[in-house]
Amino acid sequence: MADAITPRAQDYSQWYLDIVQGARLADYSPVRGCMIIRPNGYALWENMQAALDAMFKATGHRNAYFPLFIPQSFLAREAAHVEGFAKECAVVTHSRLKLDEDGALVTDPESKLEENLVVRPTSETIIWDTYSKWIQSWRDLPILLNQWNNVVRWEMRTRLFLRTMEFLWQEGHTAHATRGEAIEETERMLEIYATFAEDWMAIPVVRGIKTASERFAGADETYCIEALMQDGKALQAGTSHFLGQNFAKAFNCQFQNRDNELEYVWATSWGVSTRLIGALIMVHSDDQGLVLPPKLAPTQAVIVPIHRTDEERERVVARARGIAADLRAAGVRVELDDREGFRPGWKFNEHEVAGVPLRLAIGPRDVENGTIEIARRDDRSKTSVPQDGLAQTVRTMLDTVQQALFDRALAFREANTTDVDSYDEFKELLDRRGGFFRMHWDGSAETEARVKEETKATIRCIPLGAAEEPGVDPVSGAPSKRRVLYARAY
Image 1 (cartoon, one colour):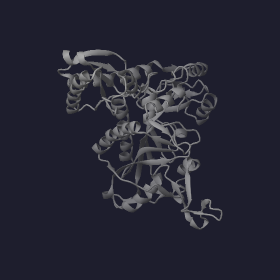
Image 2: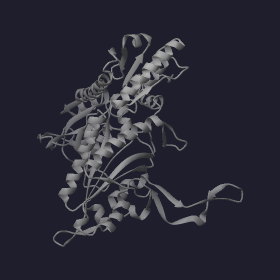
Image 3: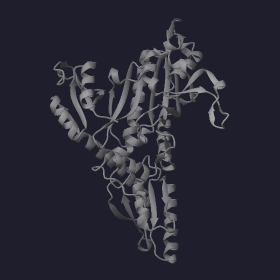
Image 4: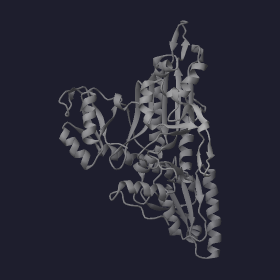
C-alpha cells in the first residue's frame, strides 16, 4: 500500500511530492535537478501529446526534428535572446574523455571543440539559421513546423514536473509573409492551448498578454494562459510568442515578396511542457492522492473482482473479463486487476492514489444479481448499477466526471479572484489566501518591479478581451487604463 500522503493544509509542497511519488509518476534522478518519468507519468504525457498533436495537425502544422546541440555563436546573434537564456545554458566544450596516468577518467584536452556547443534550451536560433536557407520567395511561406523534444535549462531550484533542468515539451516555430499572418498564428495557437487546457485537462485558464518584463526573450509579444492552483498560486500553462522579424534579421532570413521586393520573414514560436502534469496534480488532486480528468487518464476505469473461494474467483473473474472486453469495445481504457495475493482494499487504495476516474467492484452477489458497484474518484461516491448497458453508463459517467472537475476548478478560481483597489488590502489577502487579483496598473515597469520586490507577486497577464476601465494604480497613485491579473506563481 502507498505511503500516507501529507494533507494539503499541513504542507502543500510535501503533499505535491507525495502524490508524484505515490502515484508513481516520476522519481528523482542521480543527476541533481533532473527527473525520471515513470510509466504512469509517461502514459499521461503520451495522452497529452496525442491530443495536442492532433490539434496541431488539424491546423496545418507538421512535425520535424532539429539537433540537440546548437553552436554557441548562434545564441549571440539575437541580443534579447542571449540575455534571457545565457545563465541557464549547459555548454559542451570537449568531445571525449580519457584515462590519465593514475587511471582516473578525465577530459581529454586534445578534444576541445573549435566552437562550444550549447545543449538546446529552446530552438529558435538553430531553426532560423535553417529557415534562412529554405526561404527565398513568398511561395515558400508559410512554414508551419512543430517538434516534440527535450530541452535543458540549468535551474538551481527544481521540483518534479514543475521545474527541472531537463524536461519534455513541444515547440512550434512558424514563418510568415506578413505581420498580420504571424499575429493570427500566435493567437490561433494560444486558443489551441486554452481549448486543450479546458476541454482535456478540465482546467479553466485566463488568456492574456505578458508585460514587457515577463516576455519571452526575443519576442515582440508573449501570449499566455494562466491557471490557478489549489494553494492560491498561479501557473503559466502555455505560451505563444509573436517574434516579429527579430530572428529573421538576426539570421538574415529574407524573402522576395509579391512585389519582387526583399523583406524579412515574420515569426512565431509556441510551446507547452511536462509542467502540465504538475498543473493537473495541483488543480484536481486531494488528500487521498491523484485525481485525473477521464480524457487524459491512462486508465479510465479499473475492475476489481471480489471473492473468497476458488469457486467464487472463477465465476467473478470470468464475468469481469467479459465486462472488460465490452468496455474496451466501447472505447473505454479499462484495466482488470485480478492480481492474486492482494486484498481488494489494497487494490482500491492503489488505484485511488493513482487517480483512476472510475473503480468497478464486482463480487459473487453482483454476478448473481447482474449488478456492479461504481465508485467515482472525484467525489468518492458509490452507486450500484445494472450490468446491462454498462458501457453506456460508464461512458456517461466519465463525461460527468470530466465536467465536474472543470466546474469545481472554475468555482474555485472564481471564488479566489478578487478586484482590489487598495495596495494594503492586496498584500493582506495575498498573504492570507493567495489567488488571482485584478488590480489597476499604471503601465510602468517601476511599479511592476516594486510590487514584485515587496510581495513576490507578478503581473501574470493583461487579460485578453477585457474592457478598458479607467482608474488609479493603488501602488503608485498614477492613472491606469485597465486592471491586470496579479498573483504569486510557480
